[in-house]
Length: 320
Image (cartoon, rainbow, N blue to C red):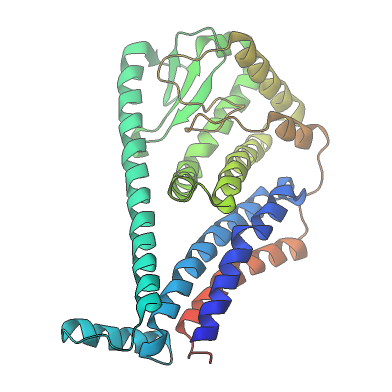
């Protein structure tokens, strides 16, 4: 199993630095944001699995020829209150590190979820005081503020889209419709769940390039995915004008309504972190064809293999 541990450690290292750096610089991602999103998720999951798996396999290596046999032996030692004589200091250190890292990741995921839920609850309470339902648009609230702001507030059956009256005055009807379609795409495609997972990954491992680059990439990709939904029923020129007007208006005003968490057209949905507006405008002004079926299948296959490799290394019979 020692070779398995080394292979998992090597895979974790590759997925922590060169692969995310290369993907963050790739230009094809704007052509097929869905495939790029799947690949980023696979990199994050496979990297975490490899990192924890390498330490677990190394720590259990003296107890069996494969992970399952070693886990059975470890269970016997624990339940029988036996002395783990086969395990030396570095084996115990690796096992403790794997356990602590796993607990840290799960705890950070839950803590991030609790923080986001609390923020949204307070935000919803502020909206009840500062906004009123739109008579023309379903599940849409209008807040009295001069800045052009649009964002969505996820909440299951209580999900709403929030617009400022400054936005409604600045945009033409077809541009406003594009904004609404864009924001509702965030809700229907559950982009807030993706942002939550990658925000937790970043909070848990802020020193890891994967977590930083992945969060920035996912922020941009969810905006592109929402743009693509709006493009199905809105000409690109109209969407470009809407993005540009909102971006310029937000920059000129310099502030947002109280309680607003990002989410306007030039920003991500719910985390207050701006995305690259120029990149979004560029892909609309000079559209390039999406990846072909072969290339898309290749990306999705690579994503599946990234998850399969560490899984097979962990579950297959031990490699000497």
